[in-house]
Image 1 (tube, rainbow, N blue to C red):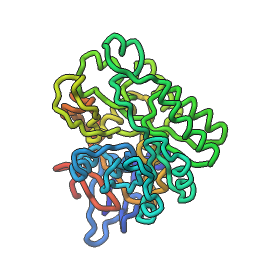
Image 2: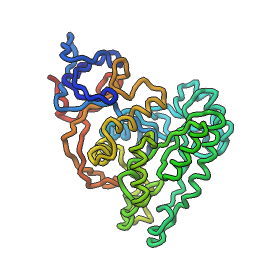
Image 3: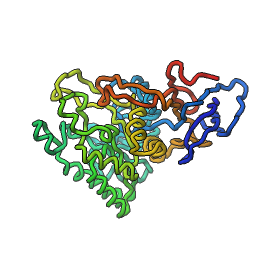
Image 4: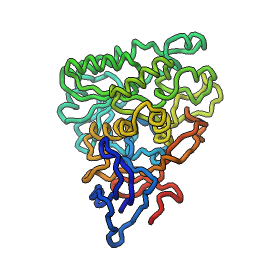
Length: 378
């Protein structure tokens, strides 16, 4: 496959060239490449090529095949789906049915990432991660309270999460990372207090990274005043001041990765109190991130690529996440000028106008999603 006249970033440098894909890899990047016999040619003038996103915090309740199609539409090529044997990234859930999983056997069967959702068996899990050199994702189970503690929670009379408890549970993992020298990704981080603790432990020799939901950078808890069920997200959104602090942390590279936090909202309840928790957002991941983080000048386009593709690939030790020769050809082709509207009524972003639309998704050099009449052959 030959991508003609592609615009892309090589690190921090904006380039325009032709990109040849062969045998699952990016084989050549040069200007004025000529097609070879029977080669598929895709004209990418006025389009942008970037690495497909990787989402490490997805909960699949709607069936994996349906979830994949939503992900591709949002520019997500690889996704780690909790409690799903079909996950694109082969994860090992460390604890199942309150018992330690057979981590060694699952690793030998191709497990790529070890996930701890509680601090049960922490010592054993940590030693497995170190012994098998597995990336360790800490994604603690949510308390499933509707709001964070604060003035608004009291005014609305809603159950709330007490901020202190999040960090008391995470600190145990932080100390293990420091003591045993284990790299860890802390999932669903939305508190600047947590980020300060991560920084402090890293200064003491830990290897900690933070992953934050897109929703918590774009929305704040004021949306709860309308009692809309689509805003019932776990963990809950924070106040405007906290949201702005998260944006500043992202800008300063204190947040390594972003996630759509996609959870199918398995409920038709009309009342906020009766609604299930959920965050149906993966199908609009690229447009939401590009519109509200890049176009709003929170971060640069290059930094968006890092926090939604490059850093995840490095964490998983994948040869992907960048548009470079000999990298896996996991790419998306997008029209940055296209405008769309979020039409999923269960999405927290429902009704918002977005810039940027995914035209084609490519995994290992093969097209796996294409928007009708997009990226036509030349």
